[in-house]
Amino acid sequence: MFRPIATSALALILGAGAALADLTPADVWANIERSLADSGTLVEIGDRDESADRLVLENVSLSAPPEAEGSFVMTMPRMIFEDAGGGQVRSTIEGDMTMTGRFTDPSGEEGGMDLVLQMPGNQTLSSGSVEDMRHVSTVPELRLTGTTIDLDGQTPLVLTMTGLQGSQAIRLRETGGNEQDFSFTADSTDLTFAAAQPEGVDVPAQNVEARLRIESLDMTGTGFTPGDGTSMDADPSAALRAGMMADVAFTTGAITGSFASDGTNDFGEPEQGSGSFASASSEFNVKLSAEGLEIGGGGTGMSVSAEDPAMGMTMSYDIAEAAIRVAMPLLASDQPQPFALRYVLDQMTLDDSLWAMFDPEGQMPRDPASLNIDVDGKLMLTADLMDADQQMADTPPMMPLSLNVNRIAVAAVGATAEVTGALTFGDDPTMPEGRMTGDFNGVNTLLDTLVAMGVVPQDQVMGARMMMAMFARPVDGDQDRLRTEMEFRQDGSIFANGQQVK
Image 1 (cartoon, rainbow, N blue to C red):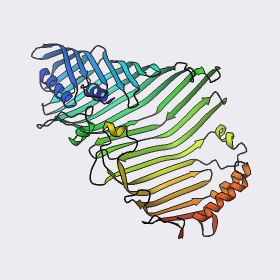
Image 2 (image 1 turned 90 degrees about the vertical axis):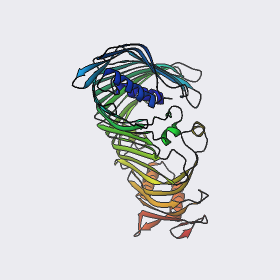
Image 3 (image 1 turned 180 degrees about the vertical axis):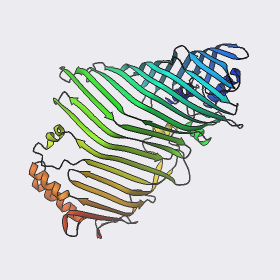
Image 4 (image 1 turned 135 degrees about the horizontal axis):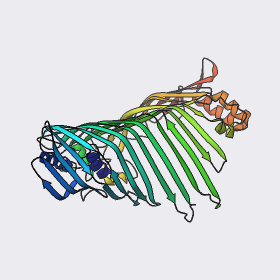
């Protein structure tokens, strides 16, 4: 869907007009075409005016290949390449660029975008040789305006970035394809959009406006595009096997945002709401190659506040740090492949108004809550996950072989739980073999508090304690410190603290 958009826009914006360059303007454009062709992008030129030290292209169109999912066309009114002296070529883009895209997602819903891109004062200075070139770009301001399209209609948006600077190197391979590395910074980024949901049979009308500001955006990355005709648009699995690779990382300074809604509730009454969010810093990275997909990201110093008109109250919470990392294979193999998941939610605190909803008398400890998940293992992948038929399949084509629970830990309302262990799987994944250990602190005290609050009846707590007694034992005689040691055997039997429970 959006792969052709990302491919074409990245080639243009990061180079601010010249993805490649050499000693003459004509060589620069020849190499641009080579780079775009490697990515599967189609190029059409309305008019070409060339002299020894200057090349002007009119109505340059970049589009996704016919076999791509959906359609995308980007048009640049005028591109100018001219000799800047000292072995450098200066390139600029003049006029408003347009971007139009249409796609159908796997569920059959149609969507798209109609956007206008403006980059007044953009300039790229390129130097080097045909095979190995460096390009330094500046864009005082980038402005993207237009609408996105979905089932609910058109959503206007405005994106503004200031103080853009970039550096990009592209090295052509004699056997085809090209290697890239780049860095990109922006002083600030502002995004605004407004969405209108029309009234339906079972859906009330709703209007939403949102704003986002990002300080100090930095992006770095490396990549390789094969030149054998494969592309992520037409056949992502083939492109990855041919060596397609991307490794991109983003970091930001402070992020702030807000939203406001105005509409009607289920009874036809007017209803308004608003909210805000902020973070001190954030990061995001993605790596895509034949070895698999790895996605990670996180933020620090986060806060969220929202006004709920239905409840007539403002709710807020803070998080000291949140992070996630997912790694998984994409291509089928007859050998085991690794996977991993890590998630951290550290020091989450709730506003007193939220606590008052279920603990008005303050009987429960209100210490910050935390969650830590760290697991990895190996699996067999029997089909390529990026194939279109697999994306619609009910069951993913994978078989687990091993699972390492390095740590799963929860701390909240005065209680903690931590689980570690390792399992292996045979032909039947429902019959693992291995051991798991769990340590639980403060659970009995929490149950007593819930009974005192009237949240849980005493008879239900008795049943819960009887169940815990089957699977856990006190540590050093302390009834508020429990440990469970689970053993899973090859024949399917399960033992808890040495006692067979299955």
